[in-house]
Length: 299
Image (tube, rainbow, N blue to C red; front, side, top):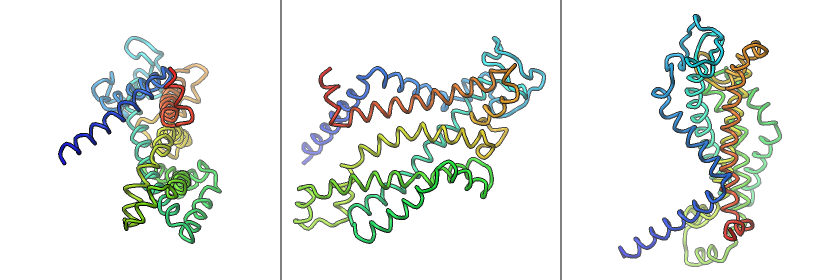
């Protein structure tokens, strides 16, 4: 029995290693992963690597207001004299936390609903999917702006506003996978021997439907970072003095012609983050999709 468990763990480790090898065999995906590793390390060790941690948290320094890039301030300072590099480093924390929280919420809501709708079918499926369609009928960013405007501008309300119109995509994706998998012979065999519906859904169907969910979640991380920045730019997300890339882009608008560095570097941080998530998401999709996996096997 113990040997059987060890062999099972070995096979899982081997399969995970092979999947990782397929993902990172693509140099573009590796480049995206390096961006994400740098972003995560920056967020984790922000207080230790930021040149001016207090300014990164929002402390003003009017004596060095709108200073251009220099050795003391490699990316310059903003309209309140705060070091741009320190603000970007602390802003990475907010963006990553927001992306992780929103993805966790939409997966925890959307995946179970899609699993139930696809497996049970009938009126339950009809009710869940029509409700999801009703949410999707509204433009997601416009709905998020309306929700934040009604609840009040802050980061917590922004996360709720982004999560509400996002979960139906995971419900639809999960349902489509479940409808296909539940007709498989091994599911019929499980029903024939008397396995309960809950066990079939959790042990047999769910693990076989997670690959597209993982890919979609990775790709959506970049879009969520962009949405958080968009709400911050409009003044509906993170509120000053907390560091937020969208707020920094907004703060630099009126100074852009002469003090270009305020908006440029914060916009560049948003661009690199979204690029990193998209490249890694595309790499995972290619590695997990059997229709195009031959590219890796051929190489």
